[in-house]
Length: 227
Image 1: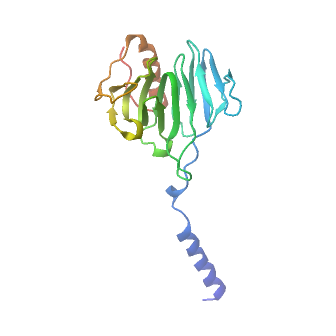
Image 2: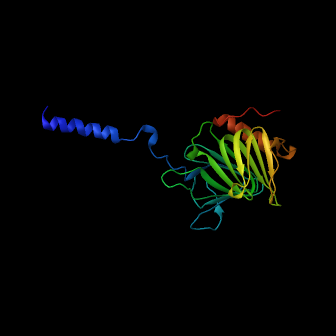
Image 3: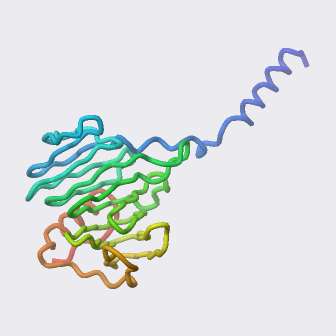
C-alpha cells in the first residue's frame, strides 16, 4: 500500500477514534431565556443597569437579570430547551449564574417573592432542569409541574402537581423528595415535616388551572384540571 494512502487511512482512523460521541458534545447554554408571555404589568431589571423598566415581550433574560410582576400581572420566561418559568401576581425572580464550567448544572433561579410555577419537560437531562433557591430551601425540578410560594413570614410552600422535585435545606442538612400530587411547607427556620397530599387554596384555583392547561398544551405533562 502506498505510503500516502496508508497515512490517509491511518489519519482517518485517528480522527474517528478521537471524535466525541454524539452525546458527548457540551450541552447548549440555557440562558439567556426569553420572555414569551406578558399579562398586566411586568418589569425587568438588567444586571448592568439594575433600575426597573417595563418588560417587553420577546426580551432576552440572562444571568443576573430580574423580573417582577405587579398586582394582577403574569409573565412567562422560557429557557433555550423550552423549560418554563411562570410568575404570578406580585412576584419576583432573579436568574443566577450557572455552575459547573464546561458541564453546567441546572438553570439556577432565586425566588424573591410571590408565586412561581416551573414546568420542566419529562426526561429532561440534568443541565436543562431548574433549581430554585427560595429562602430556606433549594428546590430542584425534574420533569414536573411545580408551584412555589414565598410567604411574608419567610416560609416556602412547595407544591408538586405532576412529576417530581427534590427540596433540600442549607448544606443539605435535610432533604425531601416530592412526587405529585404532594406538597411541603418549609418554615423560615428549622426542619420541615414530611410531604403531604396536595391541597389547592380556593383563592388560587384560577392560577393553578391556568398553569395546568399551559403544561398540557406545552407537552410538560400533567392531567386536565378538575372542574
